[in-house]
Each structure stands twice: as structure tokens, then as C-alpha cells.
Length: 509
Image (cartoon, rainbow, N blue to C red; front, side, top):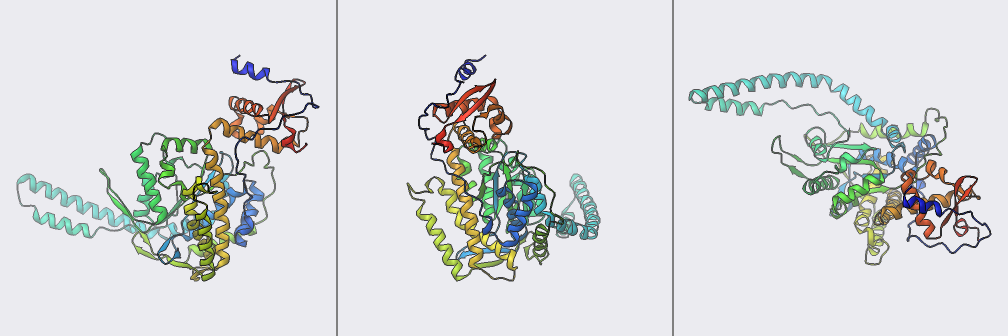
């Protein structure tokens, strides 16, 4: 038995429930989670989210992120947003849910992307004759090119003039058939460079909707130079800017007038590792500031089966609206570049946006509430406008030229909630893992203390407590930390080790 385990076992005492408890020591200045503002969403969107959540039982913010990610995917190619005369940009969103595996993000994504996948399939089917013709034409073109190259090589080998072959080859290059464009809206877990290539060469408006964010964010072995390059590339795509990518062994290319949505889930431990590996670049480059972050509490252990709603009418209404948007004629500026319409804030919405922007700005100063998340807060007003444009198009169509004050207020409420989540997560990210574990355990124990007035079995925590703390060593360390801070005591009850929460925290004193 280890020294730590011996000390841990010796700390288990039979409790005297008449004992007085010292006041519990505060752990940190914890930012408490706020309820997701589901009522702020447009009616059809909110009702679809609630219908899906009622069946899937995934955390509500995670379900909402799936729905909003689908909005971004469907609308980003059709609409830009103007916050002011010289402040314009895409409506694309980057969403990041920090959650353990098994929270059913893939399932919820599947519900909200049904219409997008159906549209992609229908477009691919209708493009098959054109693609068959292209395959025949490119095969013929390649044969001609191979013949010219062989002739040029032979003449050069014989020391003869090959200039006529060179001219013919140049002329042939101008006649190269172009592959017909077919919508590729939902991509796989692509690397940032592959994403950029697909947007530049195959289809200019796409997204990655994934419960495994590791590929997009980068491998743990990624060097500093490649990480800077990848994060910068994704930043440019969020901004809707242009970027040329040079390659040594394959064709170089330029991304221009493209749109990208990211709807990712990542485990907390993986994100912590990404932060450590980036050595400050993830926030220093402004990359994570662009994301709408959510850090929902797990619903695992409470997801008891219920029958799905017959025909899912609310979700069906959502997907019908997505289909209507997708089938609206898409304007392409070039072969692989979009030309969205520009949506402006109406007069009242513009006034609300200015007030929202300035209220955030005041809190960025040293000592302000948002000082520690300046990077995120500085993008929040932009994200609020993007959300507002998405909501406006969803409710009123692309014929609407102005964003109503109602649409903006919806976007502002959702953006402000995500800012609160960023503040909560990034605030705790600065603490060592041991303290974060203790905070999670403390929160869970207090929540369940009323159900177990005689003490919470330690094995119950191992089975149903926060995921990382199902590891015995991490759980024991967290318990010890909370004991030292007078927040709990351990005792044995007929051979069962139990945890008793300080009555002050249970609200009994």
C-alpha cells in the first residue's frame, strides 16, 4: 500500500453528526454557469432544439450548437453582415462544445443536418451526367497531353526543334476541361490545409461538424511553425479573407471568397493539452477568441429512454426552412468564390449593436469583469451580428435587406451567453488540474448532497460522478483537497466509505 493510500485511509473517521464544522474554505472565485437562453432563439429554432433535446437527452447547449451550426452551414454562402459602413464580414460561425465523449453530439448533429445532407445527395445525383462527360473529356485531354509531352521529349533527345510542340502544349493547357462544381457542404475531419484546398478547388462554402476536434485543431506533435500556419489559416477563413498557400510538391492555390463553418466538440483534457502544446498561440493568435464556446454539464446517467415524437414536427419545420434556403440560387463570384448579399442592421438594431459593443468594451480594462477574456470579448459583438443575420435570414428569407432589432437582440443574448461560458472555462483553465478536479467534485457533491443526507457513497462518485474523477487516483486527490478546505469529511458506514458534505454547503446551518 502506498504512503498516499495509507494516509488517505487514515483520514476516514467515523463521523459524529453533532460535531460542529468549521466554515468551509472558498476554493476559487468560481463563475457559475448561466442557463442557456433558449427563449431568445427564433420560435422555430427553439422549438426544434427542445424537441430534439427532449428525446436525445443531450445537454441543451450542445443541442443548440448543433442547430446553430446547421444555420451557419446553410446561410453562410448567401449572406454577409454589415455592422457599420466599413465593418463587414461573413455570417460563418465557429462553435466549440467542451464535453466528454458520449454526450451524443453526433446524434444531435445528424438531426439538424438532415436537410443539408439530402440537398448534397440530390445535387450529386443531378451532376452525374455532367461528371461522366467530364471524365471522358479529361481522359481524352490527358491522352493528348501525354502524346505532346512524349513528342517534345523525343525531339529534344534527337536535338531537333521542339518549339511547335511547346506551342501546341500551351494551347492544349488552355483547353483543359473543368470538373463540374458540386456542393460539398459537410466535410470530414480535415486538416486546416485540406479544408482550404477543398474550399479553393471543389466548393467555396463548407464546414466541419464533428465530435472529434483533434484533427482540425492539430496533432499534439505539431511544431510551432505548422501550428502558427494552421491557426492563421483558420483565422483568415473565419474573417472571409484571402490566403495563398504554396506547396513544394503539389499545386499551390489561393483561397478567396470562401466560407467555413466549424461545429466541433472536444474533451476538456484534449483542449488543455492543445493549450499546453500551443504555448500560448491558441489564444495569442486570436484563434479561440473566434469560437462560440459552450461547456455544458454532462447529462450522462440521467438519459432515460423516452419515445421519439411522432414525425418530429418541430424538427421537420426547421429542416424545411433549411431546404428552402439551400435551394435559393447561389451567386458565385468566380469558379470557387461566393458573392453573398449584404445584410445591414436596421437603425434600431444598429443602436442596440453599438450599445452592446460599448458595454463590452468598458469591461475590458484592467480590473474589468472581462479583463481575463479580452480576446473573446473583443469578438463577441461581431459574433452577435453574425448570429443576428442568420436568424434574420432563417425567419424572413434572403429577400430581407435589413436585420431587425428582434433578430439582433436574439443574437446578442446568445453571444453573451457564450461569452459567459468562455469566461467560465478560460478562468478555470488557468488553475492546475488538481484544483479543477476538486472544483468539479465539489460542485457534483453539493448538487447530490440533499439526495444522500447520510453521506454519499464514494463508489457512487466513481460510477456516476464527473467523468475524469472516475479515475481513483484523481478522485482521491480531489477528496483530500476538499477535506483540507473543510468542505467534506470521509467516514465508514458498515464497510462502505461515504462522503459527508459540510452542512454550510448543504444549506443546513
